[in-house]
Every structure is written in structure tokens, then in C-alpha cells.
Amino acid sequence: MGHLIINGPILIISFGLPTLLWFLTDDDLLKMIFIFLGFLIGIALSWLLWSFLITKWRVWAFNKVEEHDLLLLKKMAIKNKLIWDDGSVYEKTEIRSNSEKEQILKIEKKIFDLKRVNEIKLNLELPDVYGYKLSKLENIIELLSMFLFIIISILALFTDFYFLGVIIFCIVAYSLLKLKHLQYLFINRNYFELSRKGIRIGDGNIIFWNNIENIRVDKKNRKLTIEVDQLNKTNDITLDLWRLESYNYDDFNEILKVFINRYIQVF
Image 1 (cartoon, one colour):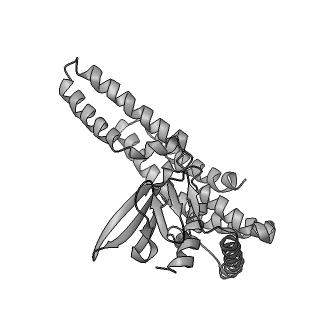
Image 2 (tube, one colour):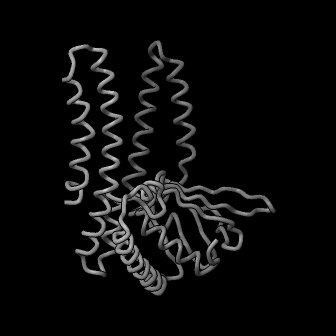
Image 3 (cartoon, helix red, strand yellow):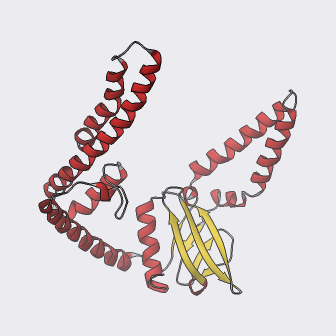
């Protein structure tokens, strides 16, 4: 329902205005100019309309649900691109009256309290060792894609593009040699593991909590970066989170925070 209320009028303006301007002239050059101007004006008007409507939707939707569902509603709204993450630049463009600001502040206070309760509950429920296995689907798809490129490169060797085929073959073959983690697809063992001691990735040594300087989770690229202090030198250890079974950014982030707060506190 929220998508229809918010995105419906925005899509009509964004694509309707350039289409309308298209019919204003028969001159091809003017048509192109009008379409370009139509898109620019359409984007500006759409953003203005979104800034106004999204505030109305926030107040209406969050007051409509039960208090214990507020946090879930916010997660779903962010996931479905209705609203942005807290602190986002785009969130600051929302047009809010003083009354709406007060209502949203009260809602955010309730959501913050729910988060704290959930964090305490999660901390009590989580064991001292928590791990993720590798996702068979994601990793097998990657492996099959590499084999497909190898076949393409071999076929290219018998054409005028043989040089390109050699380059592709070398790149893919080198990448295959680095896929040491694939052994974890066939054994019942965690690939990524959090424990009292620290973090273990694959067959690597445990990264002890007191050697970790910082941990970053890249939501967009689904990567985990661990900055490790080794002999007074900082090294970055990265992990493609999409390789993990049942990976979900919010759940993973909350579990990681619990272990950070338990053993090294906040960075």
C-alpha cells in the first residue's frame, strides 16, 4: 500500500511530464530538448512530492501498527526503499511540520527502546560461539560461472579472438586457484565463526579481539572488513558476506555488535 501511495504519483510525474512535453512540438530537436527538460523538472517535482508524502506516510503508518511491531515496520520500509537509513542525507530532505517532527521523535524514541530491549534479549540468548556455514547456492553459481568463462575462453582460442581467450582463461584459472573456501561446501563446519577468543574465517588463524582495531560491514557490497594490528602494522582482512548461508545484513550486524560489546566494547 505504501508503495502505491508514495511511488505511484512519483512515477506518473517522472515519466508523464517528459511524455507530455514530447507532444508539444513536431520539431525533432525541440522534442529532445523538451524531453531532457521534462526529466529534470520531473525529478525535481517528484523529489519534492516524495519529501512531502513520505512524512505523512511515516506518521500514519507508524501510528497504525502495534508498538511492538514498530521496529519491524521500519526495517521493512527501509528494505522496500520507502524510507532511508537513519542519518542518511536523503532523510534530511523530508518536509516536516513542527507537529510531525514531534510525532516522529516520539516514534523514534519507541523504536530506540525496542532496539535496546532486543539487543539485551539477543545478548542473553546468543551462545559464546556463533557461526555461519557457506551458502551452497551462491558459491556453486560462482563456480559454474567460472567454468562457463573457461569454456568461452577455450572456444575463443580457435577464433580471431584467441589473444582475448588466453587472457580470460588466465584470469579465471587464477581465480579458481584462490577458491580454497569451496572445501567448506562439503563439510559440516562453520566458515565464519565468532567466539570468546575472536573471529575465525575459513582455515585461517583466529583473529583475537585485542588485535582488532576496527570492523566495518559494507551493506551495499556485502563485505566485512576487519582491521588487524599485526606487529604495529594495520592489515585489512575482508570477507564476501554474500558467500555465507542465510546472510542478512540486519541480523548479522546485530549479532556482530553483541560479540563486539561483550569482548572489546565499542570501537
